[in-house]
Length: 193
Image (cartoon, rainbow, N blue to C red; front, side, top):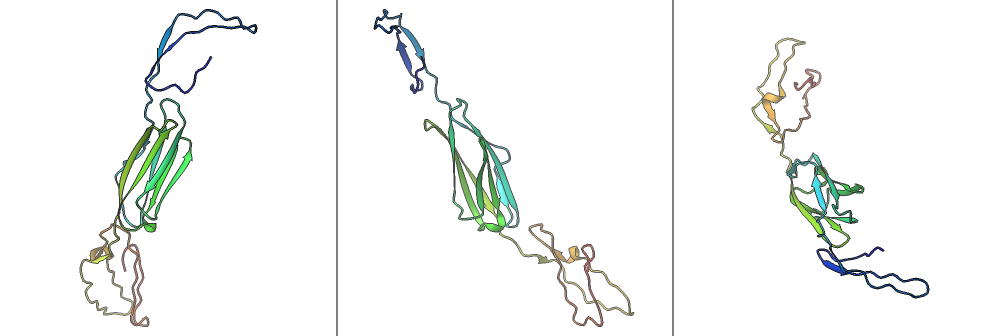
């Protein structure tokens, strides 16, 4: 005989009797006692550091594993304060991924919450903060001096890293213009012009 849906952390007393098809019934057995165990909280683990601070051009992902130590069925819920740029995907049973795309997000501080809830309503809830940093424009570190070339075919190289810096650490793309392309030309070559 199986008895279902007993309460957690309860003591139960029982006695058993048997009966046959004719309706004959035995006397009750000796009383027995048993206690049910407590309902353990579902487990929620994150595989990476939960501190998330990314530039507006970066992407961050965090993988979450979840389970129930009592083998109860669970559901997982997700919510966020962000309006866009963050997705939650339940990859498989017991595994979920949160992806934050800086280029799709507003800049600022946000949070998301994940809850794992067992079939009896016991929940493990965790809230994580994240920041999308504003993209800073490249800065001119030092002025490029005027250049005078004395001979036809002469070359002069300008190191971009000596004159420009990006506070966010991004790679810089170069754009330059020559006033009279009949007199001079310019081209990019390994971080130099």
